[in-house]
Length: 352
Image (cartoon, rainbow, N blue to C red; front, top):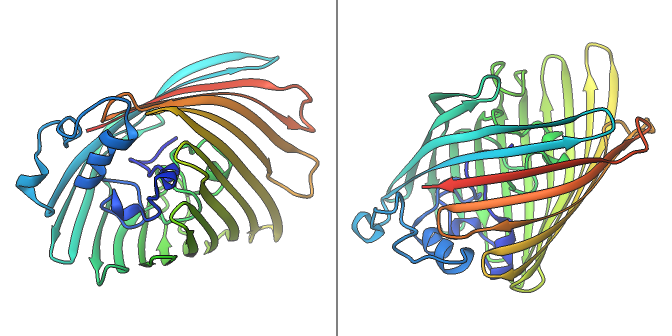
């Protein structure tokens, strides 16, 4: 599953270590600014022009200057699963929304309208994400609103173990506030948040999150994360580390590992979990990528059960506004079965 327009951290290979270069949000993801749309044609896509990359193909950034950014996303995925017991496949609409941001001097207001309800695949025209941000200086910013707090790699593949097991998937937007420092070498983010009962978290969890990142030679970005949350029925601590490594302008690596402690307050039971991701990518032609993905996880470190995943696939950005990604993987859960099952997906993304 993917939240609206998540960032592409692999762009670190082109020396983009700070997400605000291309996105309205300093923490990355969400709406592209005018420069980000230019990069989508000049760097990201196989074909295309700067005019083609404009919002809705028509809005000239020189006429609206920097005060207005608009856009939207439509994303869907075709899934396939094949094991010894069954074969299944289905198509899922993941998101459909419109986004806008207005900037007046140092203040930016952002809102996203539109949400696909996964239970029945219906589209609801509600505000899923919104915030006000204040840019105190080039490095220091503040944000207040409703959004998914920052933790780990900002990637769209929420079926990866390091995303789906952390409670930060689509629909888990929270009432949040954070402060962020983006310096030349160091980046620091500290935030607080509270989830709602009607969100994907299914609990009113009050939490704090911290992230510390270091940029090396504008090609390598490493970071550590901390999360502490409390709800009526549980308390949770998450600690992890991640890195986006641009070895060259064609070859890159993403890696993340997280350790989760969760205590069930109703039963006084503590569970420890570990999840890990390694992704290798290679752009063999402009806009065309090969990828190799390895994942590993244990939802309970005291159990003999563990999940292993090995996958290969590709990503293609044919023209501005379009993205396609496919991954075929072999996966198994030890202690349940010693056989690998086939799991594959084809995802498409159209950003206006």
